[in-house]
Image 1 (cartoon, rainbow over the protein chains, first blue to last red):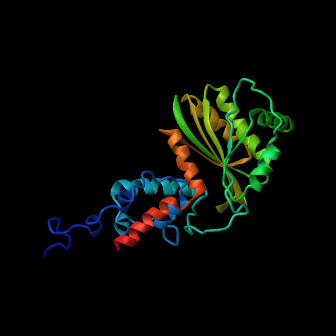
Image 2 (tube, rainbow over the protein chains, first blue to last red):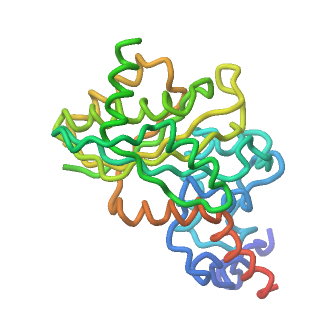
Length: 148
Length: 125
């Protein structure tokens, strides 16, 4: 018989002797949109690494798995190949904050969506957010709905 | 009334004004059913990690809104019949303003949180 290799009194996991790096780095939130962080915890074949190799706490590991599985569903991470950094067609991200569409009619304006969209592409160096007016969106939506 | 986060992916064949009309269509749906849109974003045209319906690129949208719980069924029925949308995800949200700030900081610099983690690992080992 002999003594079991993992006698609980004497054995502690090596990962439990160190502090969790996510809490010490003060990362408050592990999000499914944050692909650069998630890809550090995934192998080359796309598998999720166990917590004992990351020295991560159990609570954070649960958050990690949940966000990795969500990102896989949204096609931000691959199931089989991990993270493959590619250059997209737009090298800079295009963040356009659209105005909230309200039910009541607001004041009209001359700016159209075409102009604002192209202006955003011209200002590629600065990733500044641009707002789009309500009625331009509504007019476009009206015409597109009629066409459909 | 519950706060939600709605992410959806759209076919890449649409031009810029058509893509924005999709988001306004869903915003009007939300407003007409007793909800309120807090923030709407266009994340951009990205390469998908795997092809969906034989397409390699997709246009991503992120919308934060507030709506009664009966609205979820209406939304899911609308999405199922829409051929433009490839993938979608509706998630409950506690603080949508905080999530919006987090999202904006991610878009400016996608490696913010990864760098924090990597600096620690190098220093520790």
